[in-house]
Image (tube, rainbow, N blue to C red; front, side):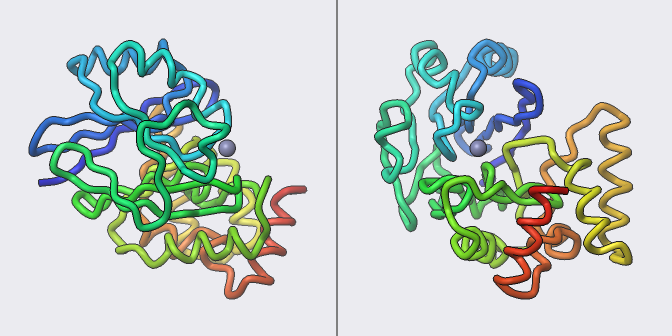
Length: 241
Ligand SMILES: [Zn+2]
C-alpha cells in the first residue's frame, strides 16, 4: 500500500499534485488552481477524482476548485482556520486530523507563516508531503501573514519527518532559490550537487520536484539555519536578494 504523487504544472510556475492510492486506485488533486489544465490531466489519467486537497487560500492554489468539483463531484478538504476564505469545505481540518484517500491516510500539519491558515498533508505510506508554499526545494515561502517564529516552527515540524519524505511543493522555484542558497552557503557540497541536478532537470524540461527531505536538510538554507534568529535574517535577506 502506498501513495504516489505526480506534479501537474499549471499557471506560470505552480504545481498541482495528482495523488493515487495504489491499493484502491483512489485519486486526489492538490491545489487545482487551473480547472482546464487539471481536468485535462485527470481525464488523460483515467478520468477519476475522489478528493480535492487545499494547502491555502491564495488564488494560484484554489482558483479552479469549483469547476473541478462540479466536473467530478469530489469533496474538498482545507483548513478550518481559513474556511471563511476557502471554497466551501466538505471537511475542515486542523493539526492532528486525518484525511483519507482510498485506504491511505494523511496527517494534517498546521504550518502557519506564508499564510495564517496554511496546512500541509503527510502520507506516511509513500512518504509524501504536500508542502504547499511552506517548504520549497532549496527555499521556503515568503512570510506574508505570519511571523518569522511561526514560519521557523512550521519548518522544524517538517524537518522532523522521515528523511526519505518526498517534498511535493507548490511552485517551481528551485533555480531562483538556488542562487540565494549558493550566496548564503557557497561551500556546501550537498547544495552544489542538488543545484547541478536541478539545472539538468530544468534543461531537460522536467520538474525539479519532488525532492527528498534528506537532501533538503543538507542543502536548504532555511532548514540549515541554526536558530530562529538566523532563520529570520535569512528570510529577510532573501526577500530583497
Ligand atoms: Zn501562496
